[in-house]
Length: 340
Image (cartoon, rainbow, N blue to C red; front, side, top):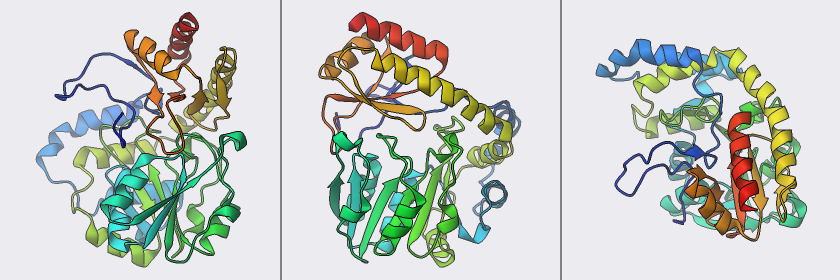
């Protein structure tokens, strides 16, 4: 597997779509497009003949109102991943410290900005929890932390983020936070703490690419001057506004997730030889000595899981699975039980 490869690989080497896969490798909301988003995309399709608003004013207002943040602190993004490249190229920290395993794009962005990269390895025996007291960092370092973390699902406390920010600069990636009814660390944004969030996963629009960052006001001005003027396309802006107005969709998502997460973990635990790491959101990390065989057998059934071999700190025995609808989850477990 290529070092920075992601889930959702449903294309061949020539870019041709490979057909209908049951994709558990990408952590996208299985409720799919909300009716509001679908209607908005349909109504605005002809608008793609125009350039998008370079200031994304309507979208910024919607983000500001939905998440109770000032527009002057916002940077709208072509997916959350854009932020790591933008921030690190502008700020150029001497070193980027990454607790691993975690999202590979952190490292990729750091190396693209020619920053030194230091891993801090967390321990499987401790469910990959992060002990910030053991992080050896300085004021010149930038630490990137997922909250919840991908692929482990760990949710670090706001208190630990604040403790870490007393020493180093911290980027908190809250791309999955909307799946949970927990408090964000957005209210703690300062010169030392920046928060980035994806909107593509929760609203099932990864093909449109949409996210935002909440940062200190002066930094927001610098980043907005440094990014591509039209980084968020016309349809993505319209879809974002529609999505953020639909509070019922978030409530339905959270109501779906809790019982389905419990069901999914129980079924995984019933499989022989599987070690499950407790999830918090819509994906589960687990380990099995025959993981590569499991992947290959499932591919024959046109079912995709995520190999974790290219996550620093993990190996070929680790797999990550999205939690999908009950019907889809049952299909997965039917296939897994045949393999086992």
